Image (cartoon, rainbow, N blue to C red):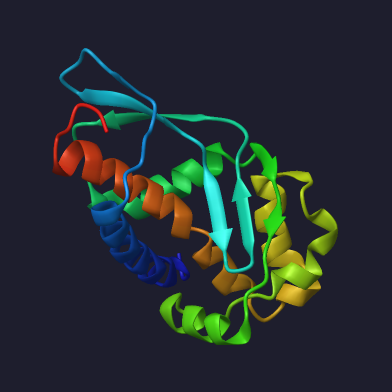
Length: 178
């Protein structure tokens, strides 16, 4: 519970990023309208994690039942549930370099120092790992000793953008398909 305020701060940044992105980009999620007063539709997406220097997209789909009471007030709880559900999903571990100037900017925006994962996890480049393994590496790897609690908070970045995109599409604007 002590780390939730930091996570919420990162999520606020994520919501700003998602809002700007949704104005200029469209996202296509496979969906199915549900015949119910409680459920709006079933939205299918792949969970993905991004921390500066690392991208992990899942190979498996998540079928998210979008309910009529879905709101951004309960976003922290929803993201934690999604991460828990996807812990055993496997995906490719993809690394990229983050230059020092970008790392400094990201550090200020994402509420803490950015881990240098590209050099430390290079042996995993392109290999299949579960979300549990990715989060464990970010928490336990010696190279992340000073950044581990920040990296775990920053891991909610992409799931928050995904959920905000779903919210903008079917709750905010009540569109049948986008």
